[in-house]
Image 1 (cartoon, rainbow, N blue to C red):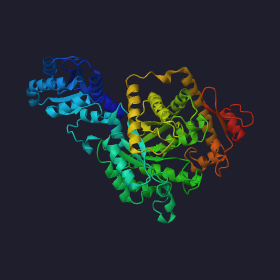
Image 2 (image 1 turned 135 degrees about the vertical axis):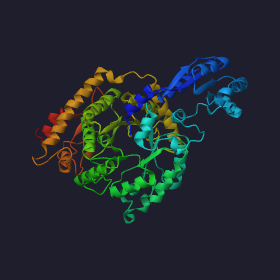
Image 3 (image 1 turned 180 degrees about the vertical axis):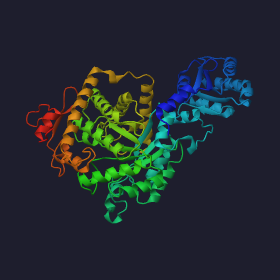
Image 4 (image 1 turned 90 degrees about the vertical axis):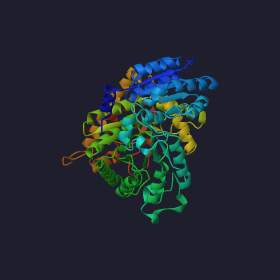
Length: 561
């Protein structure tokens, strides 16, 4: 599989195809033309923009002079006038089309309808199309009805194909199979996302192979109640339309390898998402104790890595959602990448959930993510690739739907400062109800607009000196925490940061802790945190509220560095 940078370089060096485009006749509206050409450039085309109000003869003369393979025509005025003008254009350009030149039209829906009726243009765009559809056309899809061949069917290939746009992902799973099947079909037809993350109910996660452990009263609780391999096949088949989105689901909380084998066979799982410390008896979501679950999760990483299937460790945000200080989330992110490479993962998806805890300021949120990326960057090499995935905080949405929509757009725009390869859209309905297909389509539209705005020329928020100062602070503090974990191991431990016993002790001894873990049988739960005046989440003394450095906090927990 090609590296993303290699593919971009090939596009830049291999601009052999030419597209000429203009607004025709008296039309001066060129925003759509410019957007089309911008997408064409990212797809390897040499672009020639003729401007607004270009005559039929001038456009065709330029097409001949530039030896164009594709001619883009736009018109956004009166449909009746446009129809006559396009008829004249089609007649004058017939010789070029006969010679193999392709023609595409873009305009308002009423004019696009008339352009289709003329039957001259290979493709007609009315502005409602997702970016994916335009990219698919520019990257080789000649047919009006797309097929699976037009959309890459592995995660890395799809990321590379869509760059510089991130691929989009959304979680989806309703309490019945039929509702979920119908929803997947609708989402796919709308080309709303590149990947559908199946939300399956708790019994499917924990007891798929153990019907005797399932509780009929819990059926559909938390997601779609899949109960057989054929259920997964049916859900995947429902996605075989539109932009043919990829599919994945939870790694489960028991019988991990059996589930993995079934996932690959039934829905070509795009990647695995697994934590290190969670989805066990510590958080009440699985049957394993802490140390044993760590061993199981590492085995899952190795299984997927040996098959060149990407792995995401959805670890850091579990600490943030439990009000752990930012430094703990940073440490968890480093441990995630470190364990992934240690257990044979080739393509690693670094998940960064913003707004966790919800009170973080944008500046401190961005600083935390930059600290994560800087810490894990030295791990990346030819055998270990890091793909950045961002998402909005699960617990951060307001209940008011208009405010929630604004939050989705604002958070997505902030995330784009990291130039993510994957944007995991968390729907604006999260605070009220599980997203329906219509909710996902709407959320995708909002996220796409924020992404388009950012890619159009976003200022570099990473350069803010306040952001950089906090990033450096978090890196320094995270190194102290990691040293504390290493100090737990005895001399016989080969690598404390991958040793399940040492990692489990990091939790039980209080190095990794969070306020929400109070009274937890596996964790200290003695930590206190607050959002400081900068908007950062920091550990504080439970007695005085004074912020604690990591060295001070670890000393209070009895850890000797």
